[in-house]
Length: 221
Ligand code: DHB
Ligand code: MG
Picture (cartoon, rainbow, N blue to C red):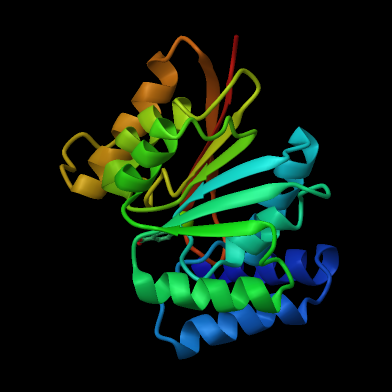
């Protein structure tokens, strides 16, 4: 079954995505440097890119840079003078990401901030940074609820918030599962549902990364 999911992903990528040597090199360096292979799939990266373009996002915030693969997809959606701020906890990941972002010719519009999501976001709120038009949450899943609270303080009406990996092989609704990752994404989804100023949905995905899904919301008036 999962092999078929990957075959379909390959077909989609071959048919709808252009060959991209920069992004291929990003994945090669990521692997050579021993980073976990948990980057978004190419068709998911393009999905994020298209969403950001549809939103007309000029200021994008990403929580969880890893090797900068999704960062580059998002930065390529920016208009002239647009910016991405991306947050990474692991110094080695941030080093690799900075190399990849520079190789993609995007160093001038992407700012890699080092530290925990909570530290960096809190400092950004204190400095009155933002608001951002588009926020992609893709870091440690147990902290998603905290990241959502902080992200909302860097938002304005119309801000799009996307959370990656919220389905976890179908464990999302399994209340018997007390794993911190599953608890984190379940609380995140519940917060999106309960919040008065967010309209949200979530969509399951299958593909080269198995069975997972993303949440998508917009901040309302
Ligand atoms: C994991 C994290 C991710 O961001 C992802 O897209 C897939 C898996 C993980 O930690 O297992
Ligand atoms: Mg992810």
